[in-house]
Amino acid sequence: MYVELKNINKSFGNFKASDNVSFGVEKGKLVALLGPSGSGKTTILRMIAGLETPDSGEVIIDGKVMNDIPAAKRGIGFVFQNYALFRYMTVEENIAFGLKVQKLDKNFIKERVAEMIELVGLQGMGKRYPSQLSGGQRQRVAFARAIAPNPHLLLLDEPFAAIDAKVRQELRTWLRSMISRLGITSIFVTHDQDEAVEVSDQIIVTNHGHVEQVGTPLEIYRKPQTAFTAKFFGQAGFLKDYGAFKDFEQIEEADLAFTRPEFVKISKKSETEKYAISATEGIVSDVCFRGTHIELRIRVNDSEVIANRGLDEESVEIGEKVNVFLYRIFVTKGNQVYQLTNKALETPSVFI
Image 1 (cartoon, helix red, strand yellow):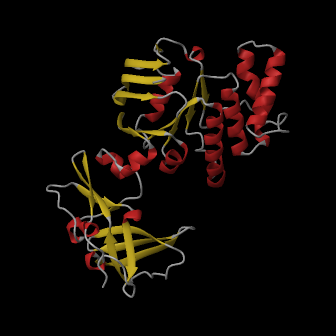
Image 2 (image 1 turned 45 degrees about the horizontal axis):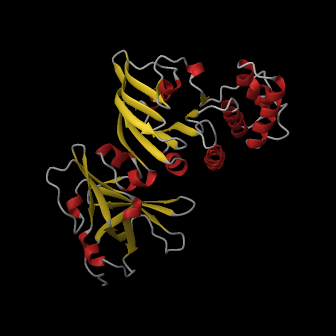
Image 3 (image 1 turned 135 degrees about the vertical axis):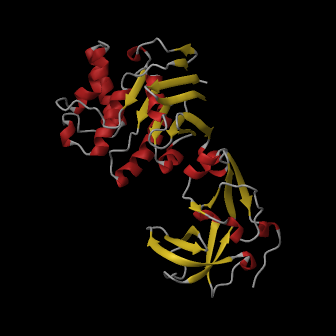
């Protein structure tokens, strides 16, 4: 592992920000620290950077324990959420800042800055000031400044949080491409599931100061290992009584049951569908256009199910009675999570 945290603990007064945190990051990987506000992800990033010191445990980079190494000597590039650009410096001067601190040759600095401007796609903007740039352009300058000194590790703290949705989507693709080209080990903090899934090679899920699960985006989404991870990932529709839905195994003393939109099939009463005999009747309580699909909320007894319906399918109205078939649900008991599949899927298709 290129980056390792071993049994890290960190408290601020009575608040425990890191509770025996341990994980590893392979060289060249782009890793997301994902969790809700207050889960400890930014504290972890700052301890790796050397901006915070752990109370106990070891921060290891490239086989070396870094606990007592100052931040400036760790060979790390850091991209802050608010860009942290110098307002009275041009794009070129901002990018050159770290190189000048290292007292490198002026000609080298000039060439390196030009290389970085081209890399991040800001040709012709070198003489502009931050106030003359868009949010996305400022973030590209921050990225260029961080990698200009050729760091061994790049850390990014909520790098897209201050950018509007459309530009944020474009920057995700751009960042993934840039880091892949550079081959630099990178760790970024986010609370956005979509961002973590789209950009990262690996996700580290944090909650209340400890690590809930580590894995690829697909592994964590498909096979959550803890109750928190199962609830945190995806769009959960909570089922107060999942026994009201047909053909599922019953878990004794279960705490919660929920499903995701992709596990739900909604059909109108006039439509013929597979497994209709295993469907449950529900009433549509809300219909919302989401751009690429229609989001439905359906009441089934005391439960609310969230489902998606294609734009080319016949419309469904609020108050309409529909058939609800659940392919799969998650059930939690303590910190254990069960993924239950509808038993009807194990038998030949039934049409009525």
